[in-house]
Image (cartoon, rainbow over all chains, first blue to last red; front, side, top):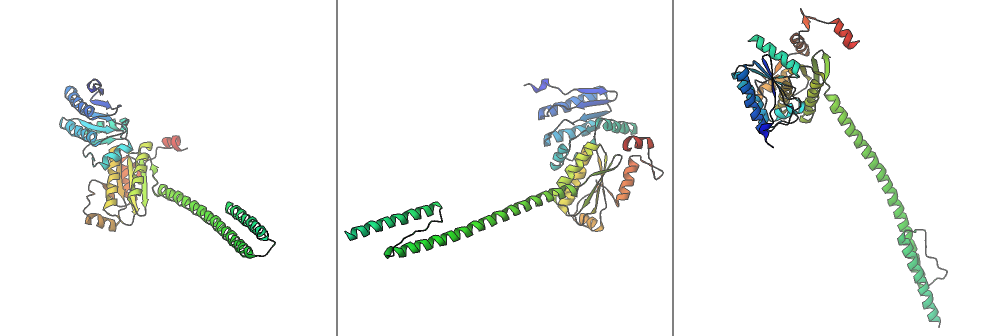
Length: 124
Length: 229
């Protein structure tokens, strides 16, 4: 199977990019998604990115690192990243792996994530 | 001629002894060797009878003991089951997470923390955060007598995991002894929000959620009607 054919859609609504991960993440897909999101931030000048990982049931250290790396990379590009809807098991795994994702904003669901982004952007 | 008869008799009696012995071996303990005449063989027969008597007695005794043991074993198994059940109950009871106000969860911890308990505590809290959608959780450790590195580490993990879900975790009720140990052990709790009492944690949480007006609780009666009545 050619992984490059399967892309995770990135939806732009007003100043935000919304990414909903609904497939199992593997390493190449994660890296591809990161490039895709950064490209899209550059192209659209989005101020915030919401990444919904509520259907993600398993996360390894690599994916965790990519997610937190993506947040810091996006913040350099002046876009806030909020990771939304993490499962308890995923949170426990990440903490046990020592990936505490400092500097990454998280929210319980899409709605709260959107509120958070709005607050952050209106502050700036 | 006479010696022949004696030999035949003896043979018959020995056969009889054999028969009885084999039946006894097969489990029929009521059988005894019977003989009408007294001769050299009678002593042997009586001795065998005595042996069978002894055997019967011992068997009865051992059977009785076996039954007793079985009964005791059953009792012990029952007790063990009960202990397991109670341990599970205790684990469940020891980490109740309750929603005290809109958007606010409280997890009061009482007693000594070990890694198994903190694990269950963490899971319970995270599950509850997701199921209720509350974004503030207060971890009250007033009832925890001592804290060591491992427990402090677990607390840190719980708070971090809650943050990853998108909820803020406040730790309240750190006793002087615990504060001393934590600082002495060199554990850095600076990225954890701590409050002196459950009350101040609650006030902080309610302020953050915009649930207080001039220090008083803001109640939306309409919402209350819809939700609770």
